[in-house]
Image (tube, rainbow, N blue to C red; front, side):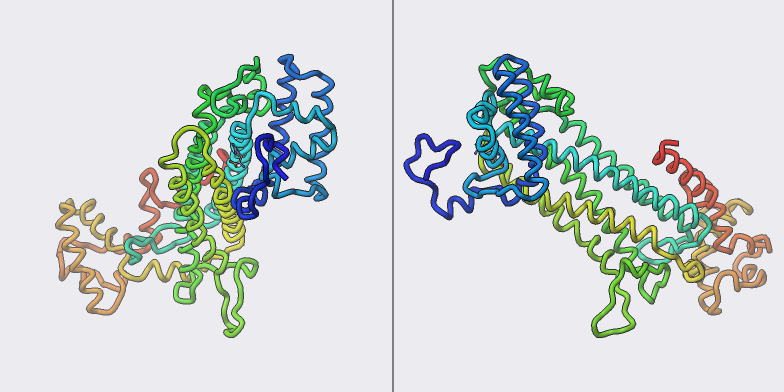
Length: 461
Ligand code: ARG
C-alpha cells in the first residue's frame, strides 16, 4: 500500500529495508510534546488568519489533546510505516476527527515542522542543563565553604607545587561551570527564532502570521530566511559544542575524584551510594560513577563530530541526511544530564580526609616558594637569586632527610648568613595559603568571599 500522507503518485509501498532506513519514529517519538504544541500554535494561527474555520480549529485542538494524552499514558500505537512523529500524530488525529485533520498541514511542511520541534526540544534541554549546572555549583559552593581552610596539595605536572585550600580547588570548578552555563545560555539565545511557517523551503502563499506562532511557542521572533530556517542545524551543533566543553570539565573533576579516592592518595571518601564493590576482591570500593562521568565526553564529542560531518557539504535546503541529527543529540544531552546529576550526588556526599590532605601538602617542600618570597620581601634579594638560595635550602633538607620546617636557623645560615629566625613562620602550609590573599588567590578569606558571592548569584539572594 502506498503512503497515506504522500502516496498520491506512488503505485507501490516501500521496500522493508527502505522503511527501516527511512523511519525515525523509533527515536523522534520523544518530540511528541513539542510536535503537538507546534501544531496547536499553527492551527490557532491559521484560524486567526482566516485560513481555517473556527470549528476545524477546535476539532484539531481537542483531537491533539487526546492524542497527547494517549502518548502520555502509553496507549498510542506508533507505526513505523508512518515514518516519524509528525505523521504518526497527524494520522491518529485524522482517525479521531476526520477531514479537518487534513487541513492542519496547510502552509506548513515537515521541514519547518521538524526544525521547530527540535528547537523546542533543545531549548527545553538547555534550560534543564543550566538548572542542573546551577545545582552542582551550589553543592560545590557549600562544600567549599566547609573546606575553606582545609589544606590540599596544589599540583602542577601532578607534582606537589604549592599548598592550596580545598575550598579554592572546588571553587575552580564552580567558575568553569559558570562559563559552561553561559555558553549554553548563549546557544539558547541564538536558537530562539521560530522556523514554523517557512514551509518546505520557500515560504508559503497563505497569509500566515508568523509572529503569532513565534509568540505562542515562546520564540523571540520568526526566522528571517526560509531556506536557512529549514536547513539550520547549528543550534544543536552549538549546544553539543558547549555540552562537550562542560563534559570535559566534568571529566577532569571526575579524574581527580578517582585519584583522590585511591588508597595511595586517600584525600576523599566517596559514598557507598556512588561506588561499587568487586565480585572477587572484597576490599574494593570502586569509583564507577566518577569513571563513567570521566568517559561520557566520548559520546558527546562523538555526537558533535558526527553531526558536523553529516552537515558539511549539504546543499540548501532540507536533505534527509538531517534526520541523523536527533539520535546522537538525544544521547549526548542525556549523557550530560546524567553526568551532572551523578557529579552533584558525589560532591554532596564526599567526605574529605583533612589529615591526609594536610600531610601530603606538607610533603615535597611545598612551601619552598614562600622561602623565596620571604627573601625577596624581607631581605630585598632579587627573586632570581632568592630562587637559587631556596634551591640550596631544599637540597640541604633533602640531604638531611627532613622537611623545610626541620631545618634549624644554623642550617639556613650555612647557605646565607642574612637569613634569620623569622623565616620559620613562613614554612607552614597554613601560613603559605593564608598569605595568598591576592585577588583570586587561595587564602581561606578569599574562598569564603568567593563562596558567598556565588551563593548569592546562584540563589538569587
Ligand atoms: N523525520 C524527518 C526528520 O527528522 C522529518 C522531515 C522530513 N521531511 C521530508 N521532506 N522528508 O528530518
